[in-house]
Length: 99
Figure 1: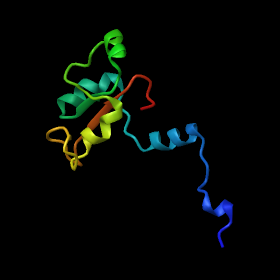
Figure 2: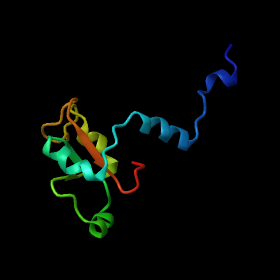
Figure 3: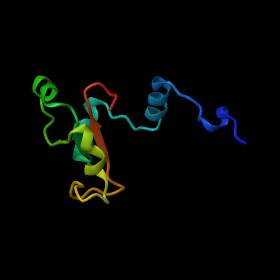
């Protein structure tokens, strides 16, 4: 018999979860974005329209709403962006770094 404590995985706070996820990311600094794009990276802008209007557009980026990002990025999805592969270098831009 499994005790209730064994049935539940270790609980993480949101801050711990985000720190763990961010540790596995290659975070690109804003000043490096143009060179990344010149080197072939695809930049996805997930900011909402009000933020893009207030802060400016990112020339050459593709705008994708955050709620459909996974479907647009999955090579097996019928709505995948053309040319996306598992090896594509993709940089996701959001407003606060939490997406």
